[in-house]
Length: 380
Image (cartoon, rainbow, N blue to C red; front, side, top):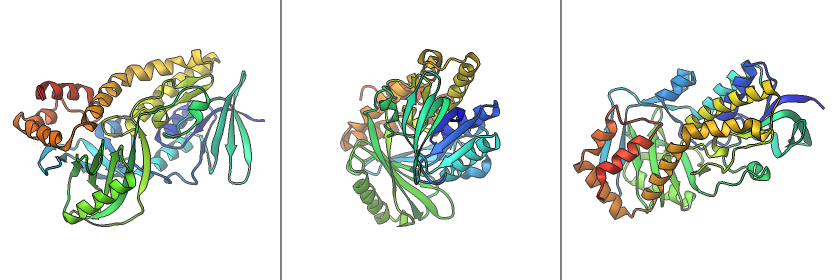
């Protein structure tokens, strides 16, 4: 049986980034993906910071729209706007992003297998076996190491004894026709989205995305949100079937085992505040690729040999994840009355100006700003 250098389970952004990096270094990489194409089964708004686009060399052709402002609305309808002179984020074609990253990996030599679901990963003394359920049969692939980058919800980490993520929210999103909305709108209303928030994001050509994160029922919450936005004249109609997802709020207890690393949403490397996982996933993909390169050089794929991955990504992200989870939990437990009060207080204290300040605001790194906001609003 052929022994590959590495098998990557999942062809999302993190998986394809690792595939590209390791293929460029000359390693034999196989990416297995349960879906039949790159763009299937995506529930993601695709808002990326300029920092992310630049850091990972993402093609400007992916960008549907630049964003330099956003409007945040309380249950009462009171709102504040954040506005910068130059764009801080871009709304990208999310399906095309997957294709773009995979094309770069393929150009570097990675091989993709579609319609191939990994049912089990079995580390052994000299290799790791990945059992694949294809469209018509079951096969076994062998490699020196494997990466799980399936997105959240896979049972593979638990099968390896890495634990489970038990804190999560439900997501839903649908494409709509919009009427006169030219900036991102974010809605906080516990009746519409219990324990979460919702959004309306213009994309291009009179279209937009309506979505939400909630601890309640995602399908009924989305239906109520669409009804509300339609009654306000902000949207005209749905243009596609809704997509649904589950978004982790905390990281996996452990993200490495003998011959195996877990990266991206599967590892819970997601901003707890917004549910965005692309940037953090790409950052951790680069860390994983670097650690795997060292493992190949040392011929040491033991959990001890791969432990640097765990150490490095947590050193990079742990503070943000902890503060973000604390802030999200606090907001999720506020009543609508207290959310309205918080918005009024924010207006009195000039919170929009504080957030928009170039020295405080970062689209991807929220910890410093959250602590500053709390200091500004106390006592609340």
